[in-house]
Length: 124
Image 1 (tube, rainbow, N blue to C red):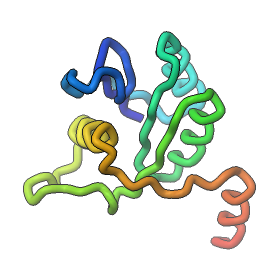
Image 2 (cartoon, rainbow, N blue to C red):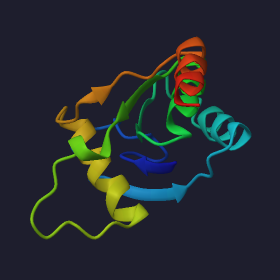
Image 3 (spheres, rainbow, N blue to C red):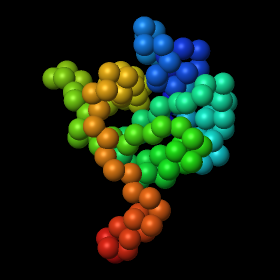
């Protein structure tokens, strides 16, 4: 998870006139995500966006359980220009934040725990 700021510590949505900037990379663990979200507790509602990956759905459920908005986006649905094929965490997170702020991302359905278990059983 990469934390992007628009205002001092605000996650992705803050003031729309402020430039998006990279703040810190947060590891994909329940404790780290909860700690980061609670540190940003001075904001009423955060809007978080994850790329779809094995830990993305669980992280999305956790953020929603903490009372904040969360969107999971398929990497194939993220628009990229001709020269933007090089992937780095910093560049990807800033692009994701800008597209999220402009409402240009299409979210995918994040399955709940029951659906996730059924999907895992079917894949076996």
